Amino acid sequence: KAGVTQTPRYLIKTRGQQVTLSCSPISGHRSVSWYQQTPGQGLQFLFEYFSETQRNKGNFPGRFSGRQFSNSRSEMNVSTLELGDSALYLCASSPRGQQGSSTDTQYFGPGTRLTVL
Amino acid sequence: LAKTTQPISMDSYEGQEVNITCSHNNIATNDYITWYQQFPSQGPRFIIQGYKTKVTNEVASLFIPADRKSSTLSLPRVSLSDTAVYYCLVAYWDSGAGSYQLTFGKGTKLSVIP
Image 1 (tube, helix red, strand yellow):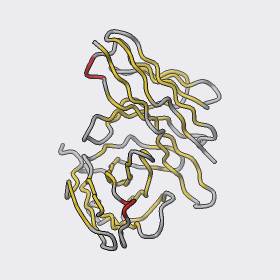
Image 2 (cartoon, each protein chain N blue to C red):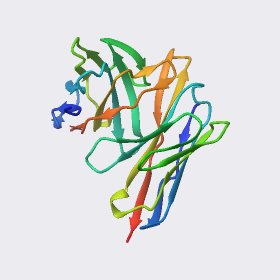
Image 3 (cartoon, each protein chain N blue to C red):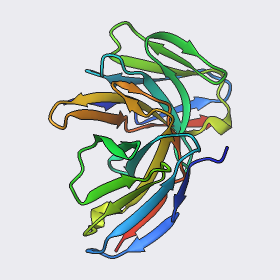
Image 4 (cartoon, helix red, strand yellow):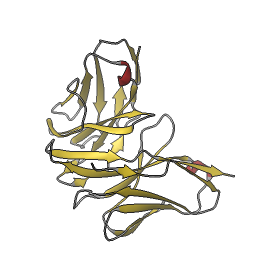
């Protein structure tokens, strides 16, 4: 099975712009989660989508949004970019995701490195 | 505020056993505790997952005490290729948001010395 793929791998934007990142999960996986990774804050949970619905959400401002399509592919959008949004954005897929309090094993993609100038 | 803490770094010689502990108070009652390994320029990779007591697979063991307020990842006989950052992951219920927060520890950088 092909692993989780993320596009693009690298991206450079300027402050105020918006950006859309894409994630294709492992075939058959219905849950996609997004994380932001920075040296200072580590890995922080953004949100989880399951069957096209946002099921869990982290503590990020509304500038960060996402969606999931019927084929489980997911996109993440960041509007009005700030310098602090520079980070590695990781996508992870799993068969069932966060069902109740039970966390399914997640499979991570290589990430998209976003640089905001 | 729910918090997950782990040591920032550890050094070990090849062939030794390494134990990395993660403290996680107030985790969701029925949640599993999961550990991931990350190499530079790669996404985290699943190592092991457990709910309580002890779990062992071909690469690691996971010890979880009865109160589940901590967990210890044990890597037997480490090699140079085990040099990486190790993260614990747990879920906390956020009553304000009405959803679960998947929370990683800040990671433990393990350096294996020849």
